[in-house]
Image (cartoon, rainbow, N blue to C red; front, side, top):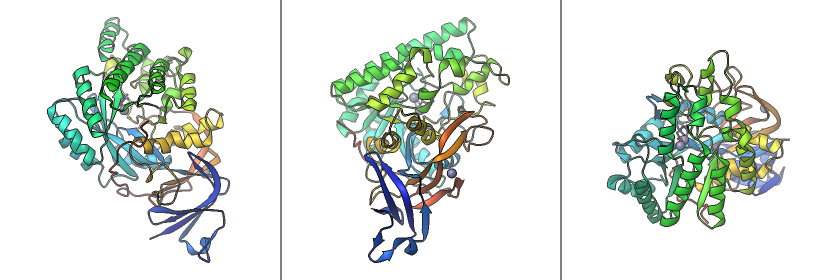
Length: 478
Ligand code: URP
Ligand code: ZN
Ligand code: ZN
Ligand code: ZN
């Protein structure tokens, strides 16, 4: 078993920082020691296989992106990152675990889909991976499958309140799935947007000739998000199921979640970097030379980017500080402009929804530390420790402590990262939603279960190193 000593760094956990050396033995962290420690009479530096000098750098638990869609079938195409390309890009960006969504479309068998996702991922991943299950056909069979999946380590289920006829579950189906979750201890994840409202607005806008990507945002107003969030909270309240609202973008939805939490309910919220940094006006209001007014398709995702003038982004940063929102994932769902996003030329409703960011989340969220929006431990908590606790991985992932998997990132705060300029990203996309972002900080070295997969910024990992993570029940419940 190979041993590695990461010396002289500042170890950052969600609980605080310390100057310490980290000893890795095989796949796990063996010890966190005072710098320069001697162990059983041995000078560690001379007795280990590899020494990583982390002087002046942060040593943090590898990022956990609990919301990705590799190869997701959507809108007549597939998300452009495979498990191979997507997890490699994740590693490059300091993310050592993803939790991806198995999709059940109406009419499909849940367990068949679950096995299909294993086939897609097995042998292909650079870093470890787990699964959530999307249910879009809540019936006796899928309710039974929920019990089976919990045993298999799939302890969270995503439902949709939008996309009628494709993914949407009605309130009765949501009620039944939540009753099952309350019974078997699993988590319900909710895409909270009122699909009925949205479908009518889409038809009205298209009929008025408003077909450009900008109108996608107008067709999915904050009222649709707030209403659905409230409804999901009420159904969860009735059933006792824990509720995790995904990709929250509206200030008003945050307020619904905060109110439920204040009342003692197990309700949690996730946001994504795009809802902190990007906006409807700046990204979709502009028309660029190469794509005409269709360029905004790069940022078409649901929930949509919101108007900065309405204060959503500022409120979201505040919610990260106050823990009204508990975690940041990417909702990584990349589509190329050519042959994918361009399916929606002439109708924004046909643009495949999604943005790719799996590689950039750690850097983008570190900017919150640089600008004083969040503390260093909070950065680690939002991107790694809470995701581990929320989704049943605590102890193995999300913490630098003896016994945990040696998923470790050496992060250089004096480094610099140019995001998405030319070919500086490694996701399988022909553009970047983050084009032109210049950020402080740099992922230098990444270990995934003890193996160095990124060395001085170069990828040195291997396809198939990543293993399936059988997750436990949430360790974050009130
Ligand atoms: O636009 C998005 N978010 N695409 C991915 C699917 C989803 O709803 O999470
Ligand atoms: Zn969603
Ligand atoms: Zn998603
Ligand atoms: Zn560097």
